[in-house]
Amino acid sequence: MKFLRFVLDAGGTVEVLAIPAPKNGFESAEEAVSLSLDWERQVSRHIDDLVALATAHNDNATNVFLQWFVTEQVEEVATMTELLQVVRRAGETNLLLVEDYIARKAGRADRE
Image 1 (cartoon, rainbow, N blue to C red):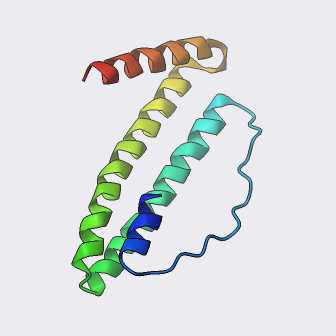
Image 2: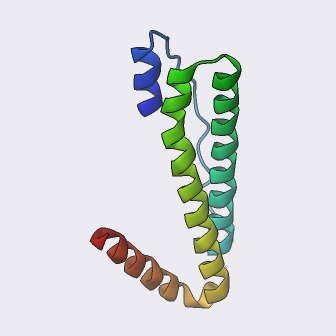
Image 3: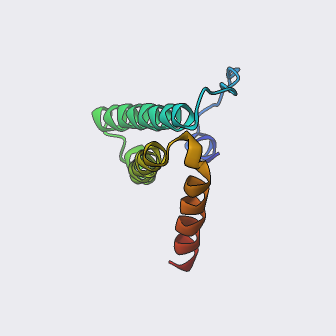
């Protein structure tokens, strides 16, 4: 929604195209998390492309707007990378340990 609001505020027009349904069945937890990490990396590349385009067009307003997303994507990729490592260490038979890890991490984030 931030992107839509920015484009509209900047005087642009928005066209929302159909989005294919996401995959909803996975062979393993590792596959699900690995695909999520791949997605976050792809989103990061798209944002990097937008930053490059804004820079090439000397569009400072867009460049500043995009910096929040750049920072956010660094965090998202790091989070998914860490989760993938935890899932791999736990293995499919110990997914409750992964759930416990996520709950503890969320609790720490709430206190920060």
